[in-house]
Image 1 (cartoon, one colour):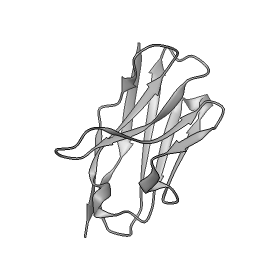
Image 2 (cartoon, rainbow, N blue to C red):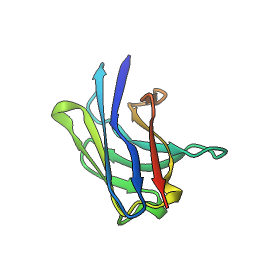
Image 3 (spheres, rainbow, N blue to C red):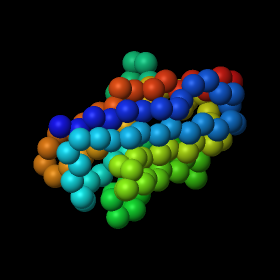
Length: 116
């Protein structure tokens, strides 16, 4: 079992910045992938960014150049630094971890609201 606890998020004006963090605990295997999804009202959950334990990253097209995903393997923690935020970035952000062929484990979600 794996538990994920998110922190960060909140309300920010367009053009501003926010940081999210997510700490994983429990049975963590090397070679996992951690990252972030988001879900806006009435929309499907979409992948925002992911990072492997080796540091390879992947970003959703609309956040490239604005968001940065990073991780601290020693702390089993993944981060999402968001800048130049837009109202369309408003969503609940969920961190996740994927290990082997197991289903993803998810964080509780944190609200990010960007006002125009």
